[in-house]
Length: 281
Length: 352
Image (cartoon, rainbow over all chains, first blue to last red; front, side, top):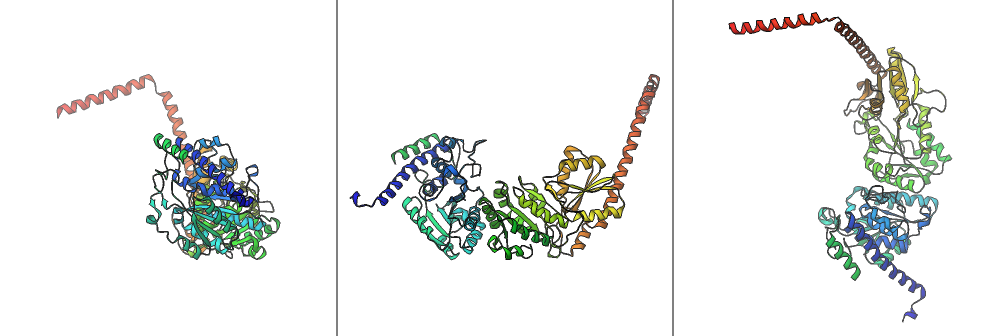
């Protein structure tokens, strides 16, 4: 049966299989980070597949020339998910994997929230609501140079409470920035509780389309689905938003879709249980 | 002042391709509309959204451009957190130009006046703060901040553009210039206040050293300390709150390096109101007449302090001399005297 599948298709499937393996090992690295210091584990687990898909299957970038002007750029607007970005950057070769353990320590290049001192980080963040505006600036700079470079911004759904997000949504639509792609990690939680209880966000997709964007909703843990939505964005005539439905704490059953993993340091018992689950899964 | 800025920007636009200009629905009042007409591809009017605008500028800087953001000074402060968390923290070459600063929005009232901007910008690491006053200086400062590496806040007034500096090459980032020499006091000032100060000095006949400090950060520490050492007594004059601006910066440096009396002339920790610009300046003591009166007072107080110091020294010397003449016999006599007094008190007590 395999012989009937064209070879390009075959290599595509192989790539996806390989990425799944890599994500499993990155998730393990993420847990190891959490063993020594408290991080936003739940928020990191909800967007790991998205960031990994971007860096390994979509974006044009290279760790050997991190200042390459025509590279695609990634902005982690929900800066508290920095651990997810760090494991991906380490896996991609921007810095040694051993360095991951230094996160949040003095003199480390891995800050609590993304900072330009980390190799591979394209924009600083941590204060919510600013990434999309920075992305507009980058997309404009690329357009002015006639570059093919694309800018991907990953934002949290709770982050959409910020007024500046909607200023930027308007600006990007007005400027028709087709090289700007917004991905919203729709895990339904923010620090104090359910997003819909804190500040109603539904209908998020309709809001975006009414602001002049094209918007898709997809499964944020399914690599093929993410990739499909990202490929759609390549042929867009408007700025594109992808609402990626995710589960906070994805992959660790006792954290999944709960808010206890917003920021925590796992107990020894939890840590071992989580590692075991990853091994079996 | 904004006109000079606009013209310079237009010229620089032709010289430097990396320069892009952003504004938030105030192209005409900030005089960036000339640039907009000449270089429409490098001009972005993003609408009324200061926070979005600052981060767009940050993104442009990360994309290799030199963004100049021109907006009213009071509303630039709205994006302070964006400036702090993104621009200053990453040392991005975003050039922030605040027009209509100080009281120059006058009739618009306190919502449009900006008397805290120097303070809130100065506290941010990496951000240079420039407050030019002279026409030629505004032009040169505009050019200098675009060539400078990191983030800069350029503070401009509205219309007045006095001329008090001679020749070309008057501005250098981080340099203070001495405009007049004197021995009773040093006056540090910036913006258009320097013009008022120069005329106040002439008017009040005080002997003052006048130092124009267009760069509040990085402050020309050497020049500030040297001038203070030379004259003693320091006065700072600025169209800004007396808290945290040039006066604050000078006080910080001198309290560490050469403590002495400092008088800060500016807005006295208050919100102002609507009124003609000249009337507001007059009301808050920032015209040459009122500054002149203040300088005389400062001089009188300094002289009084000097007299008091002299008297104190004299008393000290007297006491020292007095101590030498007190002999042992004298001490004994004094002691017995007190003893007798004590005895008498006791007697009186008993008789009651």
